Length: 108
Image (cartoon, rainbow, N blue to C red; front, top):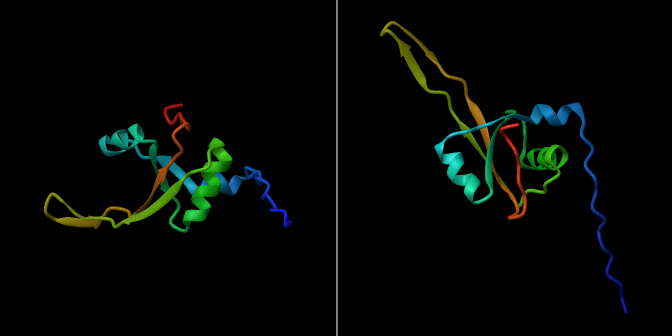
């Protein structure tokens, strides 16, 4: 009989670059609703990919995410007192779905 090879879980090592990927957690009404169903939202680096975000969450919080969705929110045009105009910064967000037993303490 052929034996199945079982993949060993690779431990992800925390390096300084991992902390550059996750900028900050985004806390709003929408993310509060998501947290009830084990979802969290982070602002991430503009160069970050889904795999990078997965590795960073796994390394920092010791939780393997189920799914990662990434959205780029373009900066809005704003005018100041009708004269000067400028744009807000463009933000990249990662919507992360976690397993049911996972618990991230973002307030700490």
